[in-house]
Length: 183
Image (cartoon, rainbow, N blue to C red):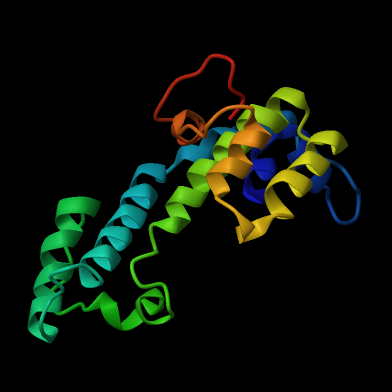
């Protein structure tokens, strides 16, 4: 959730001071940084989708039966989803720790959390003020405080004033245009 703030000019101006002179970054450099937000976002998204699909397949109904089948899965799935060939002999499963850390088919949750985060930020914080303490307190009380005690969709619907949507996420990634968005 918090990564949404660092792409806002107001926040970047507050965070970016020279350690000696306290001079802030020039506006043209700040704008350049904000425009660079979308560099490689498509590849990053495809990588997350690839890892999610890999996790779901390994923990699904018909998982690979042995190491050879696992390697075939990686070699086939990676280029089909991420558009990057798997280097010969590269078995990334050895370094994909999420597979063995009790996630069991839940890696997709990372990307889904980004969808929900973008929606909350765009719908409430951007519209009502990114530093608005009232919105911050409502977020704390309606979303964070209840935690996993009930259905998260109910908490989000209450905070957003409507059911969650993926539009703000697509806008934040530069996939969907919105003339009102400052994403």
